[in-house]
Image (cartoon, rainbow, N blue to C red):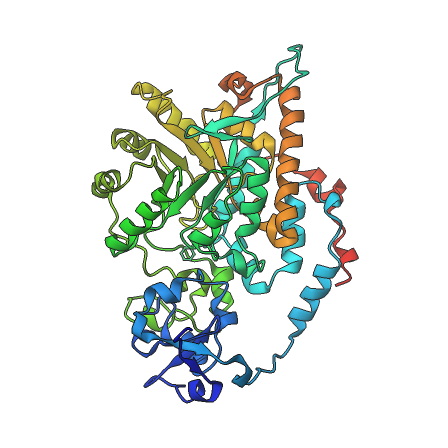
Length: 499
Ligand code: PPY
């Protein structure tokens, strides 16, 4: 017999204000009165659901265990008798009706030929709030666009007559087998765009031997993702360092105990960039994040999904903290978000095991350079110091990768692998697990073709001489108009979605 207290809807409904605030999440009742001012997303969003069921609003933005781990047990009041809760009459908005129609009219998956196509479908089928959060770059969005155009400033110098009947694009990343020279990079809040969130990636990646980097701010809990692990699949963890280092220590050590094979510490987000598309959505559910940010100078109410939940991130993080991380874990430590040769050298000298050259998907400092451009100066600086090549120090690049040809350019210039975030995010938002599998298949097909055409049988045969990167840091050079894309190319027929 369980002694869990059963509460009724009318009882909960009485606690509907700041003086006494109860909410229902996943069938359980919580007293969050004392937590209101601590909620990273602000108190107003909780008060909106005071005395009611908040599950639907809670789900996409929190890991399932966020409430149970953050609230003392005495505030876990009991289970709700669902039959006593008045069903909220949900108004179906015009946006939601159009979204459902678009979902039903998605093109068959085999019509999706490249990563851009996933983006087209995702944009049509996910809620506007999700699109605003995922697709936004910071400020004028110059860096997010540059992430694509930088790859177009690198040209191939292919070799011929090399018997490319058999080509192999498998590799290792941090000593872990990977069927592709890329890992699926961390992106947050996956349930905003698909009910299963990041688990779509987990299940598909397991089938195809691709490594998934789990985001600190994933919608699915870390343990839910690890519990779905199959075929001995490999995970990395992306870490936002908490102001409370004890929380970070526990999180990191738990990840190591569960077998995570690499700790990617995000170092380019002491404050979150202004993603104006996201901010224009006027906060998740109107006002999340407002209250908690009142005390912070210059932070206004309309902060968008991301800023609303970022207040836990420690802006004091510095090089002095690296030895502490090295003392609490034996996982390889990688710094994610290196943007200059100077910092790459410091990272090497700090004894970390790798760096990700990145501008955070164009979401942080606008007009920061692309990862592929940074790569050239980083490799030169490390080489000059005798630090490159070094099998104990791997260099990764992320940002704007949509084609296997992008990946091959980065590898030729000295990267060990690349991170791909948004492309896989859009793939699962559009088609769930099957979308991720299709994305992997497309990358495979592109690797096969591009490697043959480039004259390399294995990734080891890639050489810097196989690319001409001389225009890479010419920011004013005009890139040939992409006529194929702009005129001749036939995008996936969005009209067929009957919008
Ligand atoms: C991002 O949005 O760029 C992230 O890295 C995730 C995130 C989400 C919400 C708050 C802080 C960071």
